[in-house]
Image (cartoon, rainbow, N blue to C red; front, top):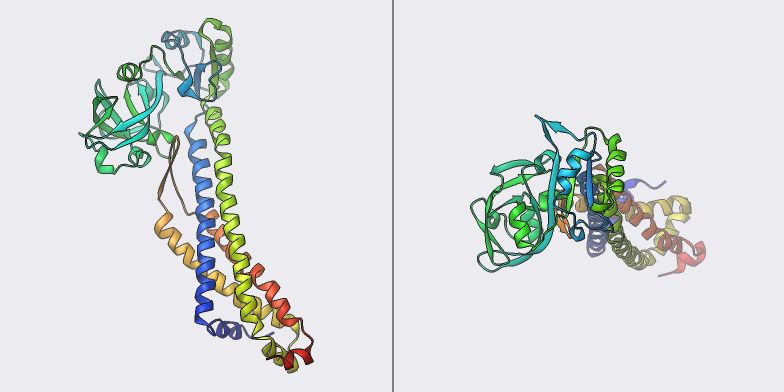
Length: 383
């Protein structure tokens, strides 16, 4: 075998080729790491948003979208007494009437963006225990409470949605009373308003849903039986976890597109690397023949050429990892129903290393084999 230092020295024969290989592999690895992080982040936030203990009573036929659902106002009271196993604290049952409404919001300076609003009462905190008020107060009439990542979803700055500020909805000014956190869920991208206010602003006479929290997830059949028996209410009972699982399935094509895009760019980088290495290795046919003449076999020479390419690509992978940890880790990415935070964890790092190795191996094999293919007498006479 040729010493490893031989491959290292050959890397610096052409500075421009080295920079091109390292830069190209860094871009591809960074894109793959971003794709993996985006897929994991979106899947994680949707799976964490639903609780198996929460049951959503939604209008029959609207199981795919709460916003289109219509539920009678009296449903909450009937469900509270008709469903067994509802969680209870200090004699108060965990039943929340809610309106889900998406519309354009504007700031006092005229900037507009589409946001997700949820009309709630204080009962919402009983069915969504992950929600924690981090600043200000729960919204009263004429007020809203912002999710911690709502500014990112809306495309505004965090300062624009500070406590004490205001937003406009259909010409009505709403004061920002507080900020809440619900780590790892889409709730952090929402805006919570008083149920009465949102009923008026959305011009609705019905609710979007009633959320019931059970003591035990195994009591779901009780809620399902209630929905099927009360034909007058026209309800369907869904586990909150199942609802968000359906949303996750809805976004599968979007996640697939990120993989396809990353794959196409990676394929382009591999072909570009092959072309670059064809040109680089073509000028070294005589050198390889000389090494064969003094006793080195074609196998060790092939390994040495692959070492050069793989070392350059892994250097690019290392550079991409540094950029990913510096710029992408902790970045908030908005999507249609919320926002999620990108995390550069072990799985993402392993995907980057595998991509760098693949680029080095696949990019070097064809040109290296062609470089070593000519017969020794012919190769020694090549210029």
